Length: 553
Length: 56
Image 1 (spheres, rainbow over the protein chains, first blue to last red):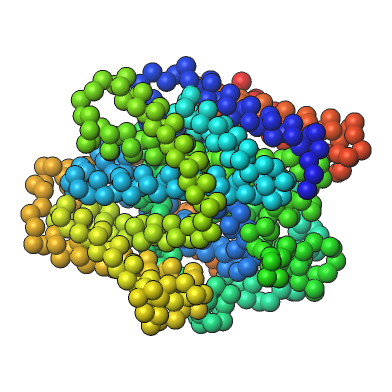
Image 2: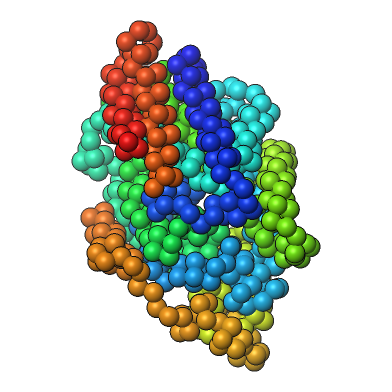
């Protein structure tokens, strides 16, 4: 893939703009609250698009196209089962507590609701995860640019990290959020032409459905038997493992995305942020799943009209992760090629900046201020926030080089994160909706959930992974194994939290007002029009989601 | 709001500039003379102008 001057110009314009956003915002940054929390003043449409864009990182864009090619239309489950329901739940039921409690972060909510040790456990694991995720995102970007454009790996790492550092250091969270909105439009407008021309080349959707195996063009039809579908999972495992445990665990408790809703300018906007974000999320499969399905259709001999092929790896199998870059290289001429490459770079950078800004808020508020220097001036915390941003970027660079040195470290880290994240939603569910839940219950529930995840992984084996205790239970796919591990960890956390809470002393009711459903005055928003209220809006989205599932059944 | 104004203007100008690269490239060089560059450039120009207009 060779770039023309016009392609470089598009990439250069993008780099100039993202840094310029930081320069423009810098004038408004006068306090730590401005830098780390955007002074809770961001309008609804910006928070909603930032909410969706913070999740639109490299794993989403490259990974979902790869899944589309590998698993076909079943990949939409990550959206229509594994996202929309949780986003609506977050907006309708959980944002009133996150926003109403005046907590500045998710770990701080845990401190207000439970105790110091539960906050510390969540803050430390989250801070470590965001830095590793940021570093892995940086590594993946540099690796991709090295492979497809033959750019120097080290140069890619330092330029990408330098640009993210420039705009996050200058404008803090507001700068990252503004750029996430720009990145959202760039990704959508940059990849839409690809879908149109590739779909045209494949002869349209009806031709694809006629020529591909039915397992690749139906979302639910073959899920009654795990061995009958390409994902290798049963529908019950999908609904509980992905649709409930993993989905709610990510969308409702991960500060990286929840932070975007917590900086909205009022409660109504905070509640509607994830619900409005669910609208583009619902149609995102058109941009990131459909190209993968088209790619596998074009590669199959039945549609041998063009000359596109999914690249193969050293072993001769399909290299699914290269599906999107290869589609861009095949269909985009010079000019638009620059737009496509810039969209890819934007997805990596939005993932990295999102992680860094979440890291600096959690580290400054929940670690530095909570445990080391409680009563310093606001200027002190502003300077610490900036310093933490700088170190966050440097740690990310370090992690990127570690990832480059060890082949399987990415898989290992993702596995450890899933052990920690899997049980998390049970803690929040009980904490928000059962006032009897105690800090001891929450803490030991999280520990039990993480241990249960590790043990389940050690006793199951899928695609050669797991089974390190004893490979007693073979599972047909790695994805199925991930869902089962998450399910067991959630159940262990749920019941351990209840058991420990019943034998320990809960907080008095007056300390839980605004933090627990039964003790909080219900807020129905100030919106007069029914379709602007979170609950009706959420119900409409859920109905559309169910209809989409039926259409692609 | 001021923030929404500011951001829509930034995004609008960005897409107008990218559209200009595609359209000028389409008009002046053979390498970029592909229909997809023309149509995408026009679409981005319209989007950019709408975003800038929103600011006004």
